[in-house]
Length: 244
Image (tube, rainbow, N blue to C red):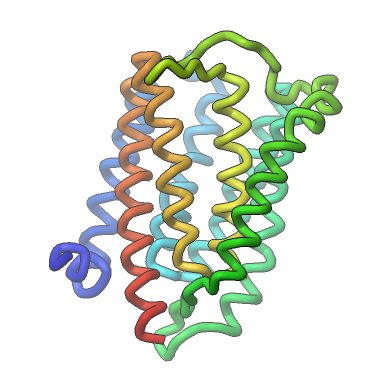
């Protein structure tokens, strides 16, 4: 905990630079080894780099950089998905874009003397609403996905992606879980709840498992970089919410 105290206080700048460099190296390695390095690939790399700055800024509760660059990254992702023909997959970044726009104004109304957003702890009611939201999302998403198949959304299939403890999970099931949890994490984060980062930890764990199962080690490294940021954000927000 002492290290996390340092990272979320006097070591913030040094940590952010180190974390960004590690993430950038992972992204560039994946770009160089796993893509054709065409124009769209270069564009997506630039969007991903912007995303790195965005998420570390959000972890440290920086409104303009975090939400501002979040808007920029989401616009880029929407353009990239549209360019590649995956119009259905534009839904998530469009939703995230809307939340960042809201966050720009909402966080500005709830910040400390240094201009950092003030996180808050969740009540039992918030936890219950979040759990119900996730349950409804997991139940409704298969129907919604069927309606979106014509727009190149997540392909429904029963192909097994991961087998563990006698349970087989398909690519489709994993995508559904990650999508619903990601929307939940984004919403609760913009609403300033410190526990939102614990949901991001779950989302990153899902993708880390998938990448390791498929030997996508570069993307697994990238996911671990995001996971470290999520843990730092979780601790920093939790500690700040207890003070306020």
